[in-house]
Length: 108
Image 1 (cartoon, rainbow, N blue to C red):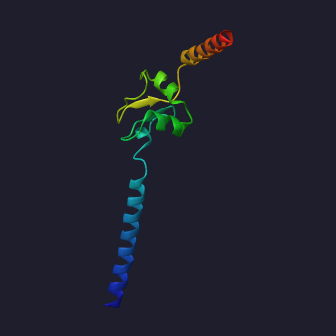
Image 2 (image 1 turned 90 degrees about the vertical axis):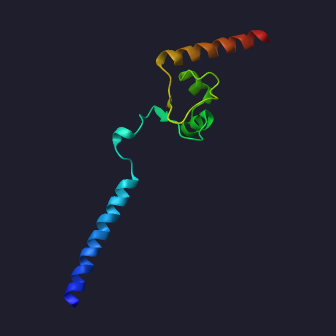
């Protein structure tokens, strides 16, 4: 009888370890395909454009411009937000900044 209970404990420990390994594996990302690209963010419930920008060290005005969101006040869960602009958008921003600086210098 003692040999049977010892064998039972050995099998139950193995089953417990297997279940534990499956639970730990299930807690991770389901696959690499489900992960957004590094230059994108998928909006979750409760997030704002400001909190997303803050998380990635970006300006929310830039995120709104790069994603054609107007003032950026309306975003939806599941929406994909680009975290960087295209090359043309960066050039346009630099040009706008130079125009603003020149205008400020002329105003004084």
